[in-house]
Image (cartoon, rainbow, N blue to C red; front, side, top):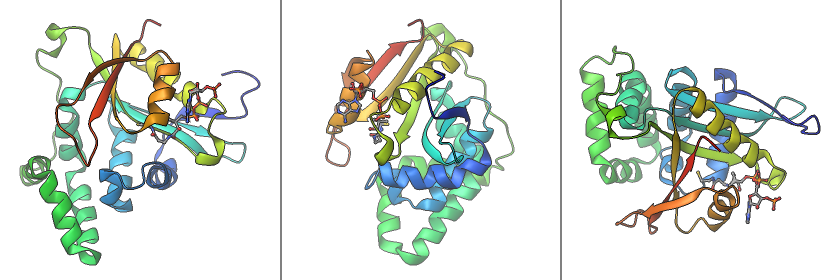
Length: 226
Ligand SMILES: CC(C)(COP(=O)(O)OP(=O)(O)OC[C@H]1O[C@@H](n2cnc3c(N)ncnc32)[C@H](O)[C@@H]1OP(=O)(O)O)[C@@H](O)C(=O)NCCC(=O)NCCS
């Protein structure tokens, strides 16, 4: 961290989760996960804090408030399995709460990702006590690829280098865990984020074949070797 950087960066902890979830709601307004509600977001980010395969950091301002965060995993291939096994009960309970106030909208959202909903229910009904599953065979398919799932900065603090620092930290942590590559997906219509990644030399690596909520997504990749 530069001595001029007024923010400090540290591992995301449970105490940061409410602020992280609130910042997610602001920064990803209207996105699928946001529409699942604040309880769902808190359960999800709390998983990042505890899962050993996760990488999650916050940028804190001088008063200790969360100015930005990033979260992802070094095990993209077991991401949903781990999340549902370890937090399935809390995620389903969060959806239940949401369904009390907006039953039709909640059902519609669950139906849109019924594949994942089925996986979540089956993880919970099978017991959910297993820990993270080591990947099988993934290492043989090429370099270990970490997945940067979300990165966000408080709107009034953007363009001050926080996002850049968080992205650098993610690459650094992924490298320390043995990953040679980091990949991420961003909505094609999120031009600000795409300019951000491109300015940091992330390379476009593909475009989804289907549009999700009105937009295709673009995959970017970057080597952790710099
Ligand atoms: C994308 C995001 C994290 C960038 O955070 P940030 O702290 O503003 O980024 P930085 O200040 O480190 O910017 C680094 C460089 O990226 C580029 N950049 C960042 N935002 C940009 C924008 N809106 N338009 C064009 N270029 C941009 C610039 O080159 C910038 O350098 P400069 O300010 O010296 O010109 C932030 O805009 C955000 O939270 N967006 C909403 C959430 C989101 O879409 N996340 C990404 C998808 S997961």
